[in-house]
Image 1: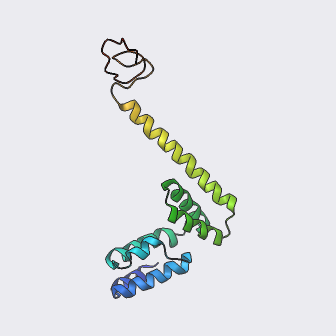
Image 2 (image 1 turned 180 degrees about the vertical axis):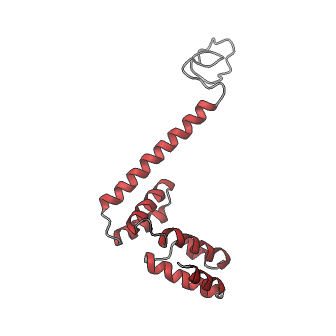
Amino acid sequence: MDIEKIQRIMRMDPDDAVGELLDAVEKYYGEIPYILQYMQDTPELLVPKILYDSAIIREFKRLDPKTIELISIGVSAALRCDHCLRMHIRIAEKLGLSKEEIFDAILIAGTLSNATVLAYATRVLDSEEGVVRGAGCEMCNVGCNGCGDEDGSSGA
């Protein structure tokens, strides 16, 4: 979307701008995403959101539409956004992507999500004071983390 079109939209009556932008989104996607439907009564939020999203997703031409949809599928899967995932799968199918290509994007999302969980949790684990690293807890030395048994007699 060029700057002149953005300026024209910004000068429009808000309801007319919303209608034109939602029509453009529907033409591109074949449907209007739920969040945009929800936001249609707040043009002060919807208009800048659509302009921003459009600039990144539809107007920025360094990535082709199929790649954008595969990225969108992976992110939607990782975030567990059912509505987004279903919509982006439908768009990907319309663009001619195979079920295998879509599944590959989902697999990559799963792998990265798994790595994120492990990296995050192990960093937190490493950063905590008094975390057991194989030697047992300070109280009973049997692997718990603060059992409350000061003399170690229970072995719990």
